[in-house]
Length: 340
Ligand SMILES: [Zn+2]
Image (tube, rainbow, N blue to C red; front, side, top):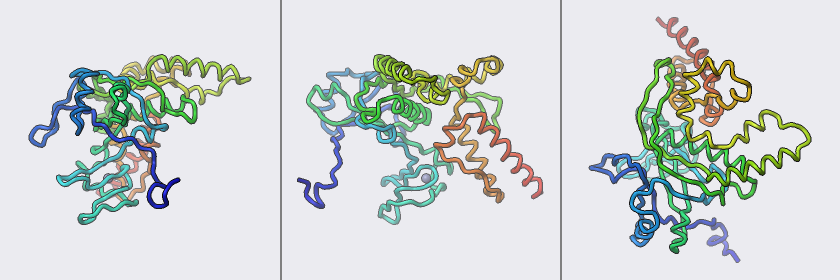
């Protein structure tokens, strides 16, 4: 029987066994070098030993399960400002949920103080945390979960959209739990189409990103289930549902997809409706940043810019956003002309 005020509000929670890290140890306060594999650390040396025994020194790919049902629980994403003594504020890019007042933390809801962020932009301080269950550690007798933290915007966007799609395709109730995933490191050429000032140009760099994907058996089983579900329906599925249930295989290569679409824009025009929906250009983080910058500019000029939340922006197509951008840019330029 739960005791009032003591155990009546206890949520099921396993202990954290340790952390998986993408980079080497910090050097003189600076971030460590990006690694091609996962580094595991724990406060308990026995767990570190068990990890090394089962996975070796430099595992680049791990079989994992997620301890949560929904994408939102499984992968928590925030914009966080940290100082030498700890967290200064945590927000969603617009509103803070935790902030430091004097030497006390306040929890609530208050507009983000963007001046505290790197270059005044919350997106520069984005962080994602994914809780995982490593079955091999369980087999070694350690019950609990392991957390991996990423500050890469590409990781954050890729993992969020993959989990949202898998959650949608999974059976309700069980959600993401029980689905085997492979978490691996992948060397990726990050190429992004320019936007705003750099429209028409491209930037490229090499990064070791995270790749999370359900193991193919699960994808196959889920497709078979979807086929059965589709057969049960008397009429064809509407297009929107087909789009929603697209399986996540295409997601990890979001970055590359953008470049193909961009470079083959003439081909895209001739493609069928179905292909177009698959090649739909997603709003890139760079585009989101440019959009936010333009909105800040507009607000300074006293123009009320349409407000899109991060989630809404992600759901828009790049084409939609370009249109909105061009409209607002026009108004901003006119206003600037009037001020001269
Ligand atoms: Zn903030």
